[in-house]
Length: 313
Image 1 (cartoon, rainbow, N blue to C red):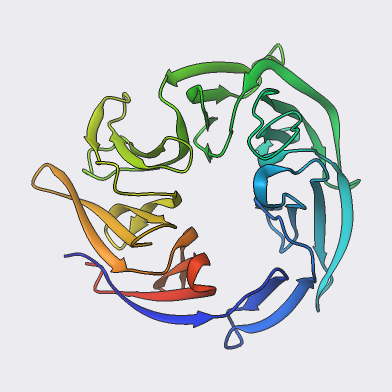
Image 2: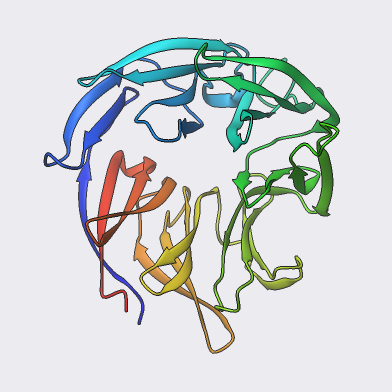
């Protein structure tokens, strides 16, 4: 049985808000009048988080920075971690000695929106949460054009760009990071889920920069499914468990602007429409008190929508 969903929605702007799930979605302003937040990463065990700011439209984001928000019991206090020009995706990876920093820039410099002549980089370092700064920052010996996707896995990360899909293994005993190309097709974003319940992940990839194709791979990155060029501006992507099964959720921002659920039935992917004409940019499934919800930033409809997931067995 495919999950059914029921929706509530909120109108949003360029401010960053926090919503209290225990108090009827009471809204608190985290910061006003600063946009360009492409990545938010929670600090484990706290309500604190780190996030990008000033990654503005057109990818002309030389002023991009990372900030830390500290919850003081009522609202948030901000500390600037540092300037990180063109950083599109970043992550903090827990390990025995602390937190590693991984950052992926979409370019190294740009003359204009369409200038991709100076490729981006993959940056690594050590994040000091007490001081709210990144130490030992260095770039890997690799150039990455049009980075858009990033997915933390178990013991490694997946990173996407014009050159394909890469696996980034975290430092070994010698402190060396390892980068391996898995797919040579231009890829915008990637998610993982065990669609066929065989104990191994499948991968959903948005192919081409912001689409227009989606492709589903098996655990060895062999193609299971490829769409026609009917998903323009593919952007929203998620994979994981809903009820007793695992699914992908996908959305695109142009034309029909669909939000879709992708399951697996009779040996092949099955697509189900959640809602059309909403143009989602990001999606996330979360649980509270035994109930699951789908949170969707329906960008083209200018709303944040929360769908209550029903009939998940």
